[in-house]
Length: 515
Image 1 (cartoon, rainbow, N blue to C red):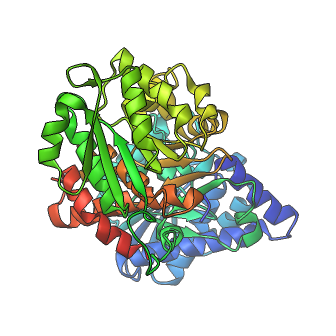
Image 2: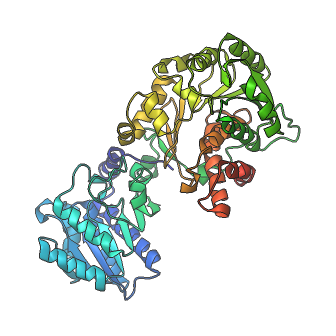
Image 3: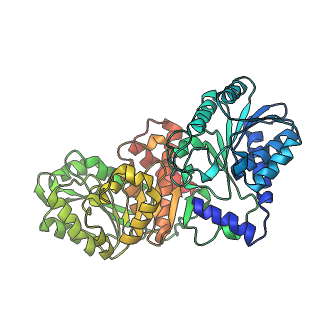
């Protein structure tokens, strides 16, 4: 399924009306009916239930008024609170107002403190559910003080809420919430999902997300100019091809992991084990020579190789470059960076290695740091590299601040992937996968328990383990999804007290579930 920006969704609506001849009222009717169905499911039926409908003057309010009619037709006791300016109503919303008025529900305009007090009483004593049709996806910027109060009154009532399209107060493109936003239990989004449903804090306000096309033409929803997608079960299933009977460790991928420094040896161990658990045939961990005896004892299935040092536990220098390149001849995938450290000579070693590696390169952590200020060098690699930064690492790579990056995460990630000719897997509450052709995928799996040290090392290792066996883009998408699915499987067993090792151990089961 694709995911739309606000401008793209407006274009879809306009083309559906102007080019396909779909009446705007027809779309509004469909939206209202879907909102009614969402409330029906949320409350386990609406007959005899008190429903508070909040409507603004835009088409989002018109959707809510259409839903109010369906709610009344199915036995709900509806109270409508209008929070807009009648002079600003769209023609379709005015039509819905005229229709619902003839059904004689209780209607009150929210204007001033007394009407807000009335709403507060209704919410607390005479309300089983709330329908939010105040703002929709058109909201951006700052919110009026009276609307802030209204939203806080709704949230303080702690009633089940169905939001239409997006919770009021959430920026649909960024997930930003400046002053206040409705805390929805369920959001029924229209046409396509929006980025603000997946970026926090918007994601925390969305609740359960439902999607309905409301009768919009499929050709518009799947238009090639929309380059955002959901990485969900439907897309992920089948990304990994069946393993042939004649498979052997060589055909399943030989991964060289270049990692480790004093105090950070676990990063390389986790990454190399993840490479095997995700399906790689061979994993070799290249570590500083003074740490090699430790890793030989620690790891059984992973081979190890000592690399020359410039200081105890610190890789670097020409001898290290030569030693790694000699190892590279017998491997096809290269993971560089977990726990490697930021010594200047280590960074220089990384930059010297990259142009000579013939297979797929995955860069994590300190390898990304080594490319700060040298982003264009990524274009010189023999294959398009994969970089796996978290927000702090991505901000440092772009020489900016995390809040600036967060405010424009989608656009900045896409632009960087295109300019660097690299694939970026940016880890956040919703991991983004951006390709050089402009396509961006929003991951739909994962849980807060995965916020633990080593989780990123497991992701990098998972990507490396799939790089040989899975072709092209599919390897990255499959790896991101498998990693987060493994986190969800681990959370089912351990809750939020996860360790990175729990995720490693769940990778084979996650892979099996993706067939």
